[in-house]
Image (cartoon, rainbow, N blue to C red; front, side, top):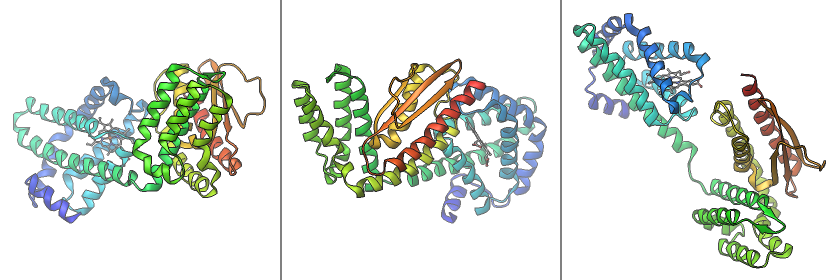
Length: 364
Ligand code: HEM
């Protein structure tokens, strides 16, 4: 971190002894701070892509936190302690997945508003420039922290690839099977499935290690389309399910799913998923399908979300999802995997989180 601080000092020509000058700048700008922050949120809320991040009830708290942040930025020595404080805010924005370009737009808006104060009083200009310089420094640190967090999260070790690959393949298959009538897959389902297999090419090696050969999968698919029987369908399905008969593979997948589930839940809580004001039935279907599929696709046989109650009564998981004036029925069935009870418990927690989020949106 010391090296980074040195580089920043050099890049931005920071003066070791400018604390008094920064404090003076803070004093000069403080009569306008409330007005600046009000205009900041007004402008941010005008952009749909940014407004989606802001909970309107939390704006007052956010303003206070931002002001406290700027006070620290302008009154503390530029050292490791301040760097860490700024980096922490970078981590907060990474958690809400505020991409650096959106963050840069926020900084741009804030800087313009600050610079505009010189129209009222031109003698403010050098102070405003100093404030903007320190804002630029903090933006640089926050962007750096965003990518540092992203790197940590996406460290590409082989095991993770297997999890991603199997989930994607199984999710594609769930969609494929759902869109099929009496062993006749629709043209659209076929295209989606083949496209998903092509996307799996990057995981080819790791899939091969657990016994899934992509060319075999494609060949069985062609055979099934040409001769659509139960037998040819099962051949295709079994190719995909083969690794799930291996206890070490399913044990690993179960653990990874548990970790992924926690991440998915924090995403839901951060309103990144199911966040739009008014969701259509199709959007709810897609959101839920993606959430369950991306985290447990490998273990799920079937997901159904419908406005009608099911006639069958033996689904592994059945939930009522209430949104606005409608009740939707969510049914999940699992493959005959050995750790089914354990997985069902985890999926149940995820479904409950989805249910509560939708219910709370309904009450808003
Ligand atoms: C378009 C730009 C921005 C958006 C949409 C945005 C959004 C948010 C949101 C939603 C939070 C609350 C996160 C949470 O508690 O879960 C937050 C926290 C915060 N933001 Fe931003 N932000 C933006 C730009 C900025 C800028 C430019 C600064 C600084 C100059 C800043 C400083 C802060 C601070 C200090 C916090 C509190 C961090 C903490 O709780 O420790 N934000 N921001």
